[in-house]
Length: 328
Image (cartoon, rainbow, N blue to C red; front, top):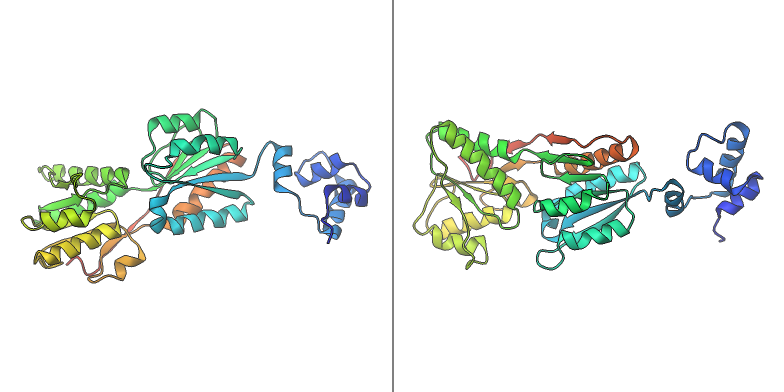
């Protein structure tokens, strides 16, 4: 079947190509009967405007670049789903760019992103450096950061306040007299761990104490589990807080191997809630973070920046602590 083109529409409506283009792109120049004739011709012929052609006419591509670290795919699925649903409603295309630590860093993707002539960039990356942000912002492209509180000219963010969540958790345990609380390093999520440490440090300070139990994993250990298997042989805490589900499971397994009962001898909390937290035994207590909403709100913020020229803003979403069997 022959593809219907803009030329066919112009011929059918007996108007110029420029008139058809103006109607397609929502111009107010064409009015009344002429606009109706073009719209009727589009409907009769079943013409579908080419998004790229529309973008060239409007100096927009209707495309958004989404940048996500490959290592985060296990817990960004719902974020991507939320973002894509809103993009579909608002008729934006999403171009996925992945980064891999040590192979394809975000700095390597910046030039590709700019050359692709996208209208905006949404980034899920907690290792974004000031130099990389400066490189992106100099092109005056709207940017939305997912997961971290950053805002400025042409930069917005949608985030959950991890620092506050950990503060409230640690404060509750300190009020119960449980002072031996530790946070395990997550090499893949430095920003989240920094927020966790800030929350714990603030809670300890409010109780006249000093937080000292940040468990930094030495370079010689490949995984959290390797480190914890040795470390928990002669260390035990009231509570250990992990960022990811795999680390929470590493704590539980290493504890069992060292005859530490969860939660009787030591409790475990995971910050990021995933389906695996309720599948393992014992089930892991965690924070229910609205991942889908992080994606959908981020895309909504992006469209407002693009279509209404809104300034950058920081939007905080709520969280909910979900107690399970790894805490008392």
